[in-house]
Image (cartoon, rainbow, N blue to C red; front, side, top):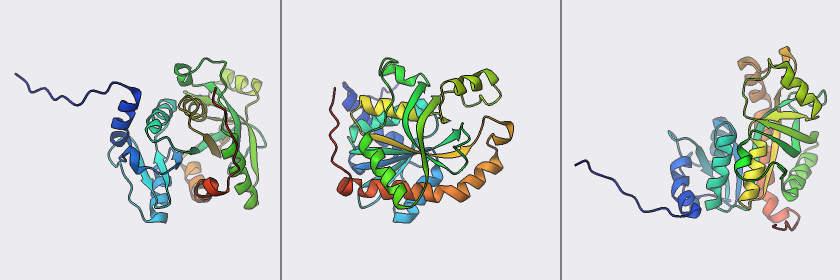
Length: 266
């Protein structure tokens, strides 16, 4: 008879996410800080770990993470809306005070050029993943407190930023599709990515305050603006350190300096 391995029974969502979060991220639920940065890119986690002289957890697993002594954590959850939903469900085991997504996006307007930052006022739920949590009528919105504080930090550094609606899609390869590009013009979005709407919606479902600071990494509405390995490398070298610095600065001080704004639960 084959040996059957039995673990303890996981009956509730709370049981599941508390059990799973270390397997996915390398960090147990009590090892995270109160404030969390999210990213799609390992170099953000590595730079964070080097800055604070801490270990990166989760190597060899689906996600990696690091936490500094001041209670700020960062997680690389990978790319796409399914991963975004997974990490926000897993973080319900932590119940953080807030998360900020440091993502990259394609700029779709003349006013959103490479290197610009976008604080999305909302995101269109084009990815479909959020439909498992709420009907389409529920908008994907950030928490005002987090975006207000990040905005203040950008202004303190005398940095311009854009605000507007982001389109979140599951399609990674769409740049050739003229019909889809016409649709993006019709809905008047300023940028496109694969995670923001999902993070906003699933955070809302789990009662977690959330925000996003997006870095425009390409301008994919024209052939010459589509991201290449060379152009992405230049964006990384030129803008990623600043992107991460703003996120660290904002989420390190928001607990003490951020305005006390009540978010009513419905």
